[in-house]
Length: 216
Image (cartoon, rainbow, N blue to C red; front, side, top):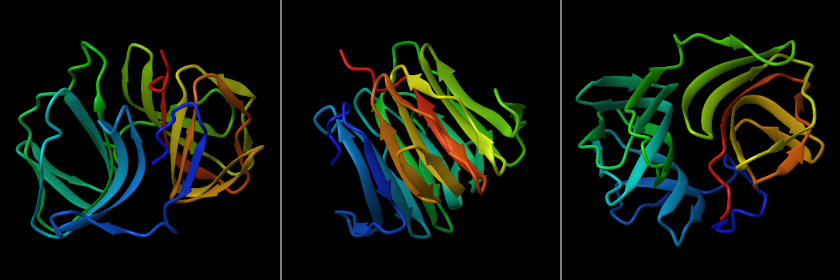
């Protein structure tokens, strides 16, 4: 599934079917599978009472709660929460009421060991590089950055290249560039050194991750 990180990928996830997981306890929408399947990106839907297995091996996980609640020993995380568990974390995740998650599991960079729990509903928005743009940093390590970006209607950004690639999940509104229009639920992956000129006529909020798709 979109295994070549040198290729641009776009998925309208709201139109994609939910696939029942092997244990029959939940469902998922796979988005990509890289590095011979060890690195995966997916939407996950879990029923009330679900428990989540840790990634295992040298993999860490990055999670954005889209709906419902997720729980671990540190607390309960509602829609909008951002969680990051480095490889080897002994974190046990479960959902008492059920949830929908955006989940990335992959090998973190060496030294990237921060455990992150961020409530984006109360975190601060910072001014962006152009009027109408606001940014909420989620995590950064070395050249990898994750953030939420809020676009006011009729906001336009300059053309730019993505060193290490760029990945976007449209959370609300409509995100656009010269290649197309991407409504809420759209997932985009652009390869290392790809270029575009993004904008939003209607306004939108997006999750953005950059710097993690460089090839050897």
